Image (cartoon, rainbow, N blue to C red; front, side):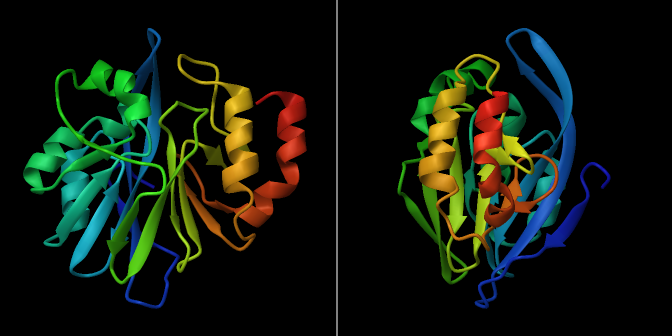
Length: 222
């Protein structure tokens, strides 16, 4: 998919809920290194209102996908720079607020020093398009990493906590492999197997496809 392109993704609660994906391209920077990455931005809502999940690289592409809808929030799954690059710009252009878990405040400050945001809390619930989105703090990739669960739609937005084929990376500052494994074992892989998992980068997967491989991930160490 070309950077900035938008597509309608699967996943519906039957309530008019729609899930759109925008893919943008940019640079992830941490610990003195830089890597080019493609990021998934997820738009959760209907034809009238939407929540934007992550704010990567290209505000114009995200604003274009929002269209004329009311934006309830920009929720950042974590505060690595590639997931928050344009968050303050989006808040201003879309007349909304940004939510970030306070566990990642030190990462937020690296990219947006002195810029405020609302706190994202474990267990917090957002009502959107006739359904509910629940925040699950899943530390490991970063202390404030969160997944967003839509039980009626049978969808989990996993950020960088889990991908098709394993957990998110834990080889850099503020990350920990044992912690991410604990989050996956206790909070993610316990969800129903039919739950679709929409990730922060790359292809979607499902809880049923990933859960049988937890012990393999532990044995290999990533």
